[in-house]
Length: 290
Image 1: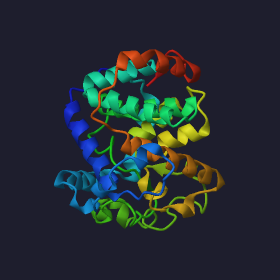
Image 2: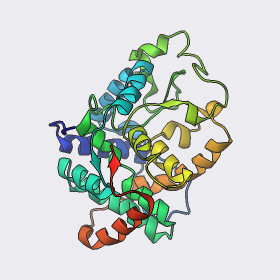
Image 3: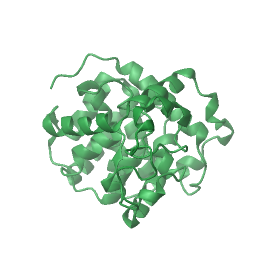
């Protein structure tokens, strides 16, 4: 499937702005992470001061992420092959379509994890965690179904979501079933049985879950790293089970590396490439279906 003619710079800028909101809103619960501990916490002000662009983005996302859309997105995913390529090729593609900041962010995340002595599978997870943003250049409907915080659809929208008032324009908010506490789900059914709003996290999770040998913790880091209302605010606990408790611990360990590893200091990409290509080969085949 050919890439759509879209501006990667716009996606980069919006993605960075969304991350900035989460940094401002962040709670410094993970004091063990070296990369988190070295940041200037005085810069983490209230997220309500974020730019109007981010607020406008979330309004669109919250209005359009319906149950009907999410079912369609998953059907479309299963019915189309967008590309067949390896992990590093996907990184190159994302880098070409966006800007150097994307591949540098992936490497900065992986290198921060590596410096902290985390296992190889977690380093690879850091390296690939944002590759789902390729969805923007394949067949997403816009930016709202690629980036931004994720949340559960099919039950009432938690007030712990970012800008919760903007769900007022979502028709599911007035549905007799979708607007209830449990909606279409059973108590403690587990997140494996719940629809998380479609975006780059969910897309990449579905791409790799049957095409890699990464552990469950890695898959959780990929699928839930933007699921802030759950892993930071404690929402949707009534839908989770024992397996999700283990996933929550993994995502909370990973999250600071995602948010706080960005740096203006350039990396020698070609010098790092052999190391990471070797790691990739331990967990992935030479090519994957995207």
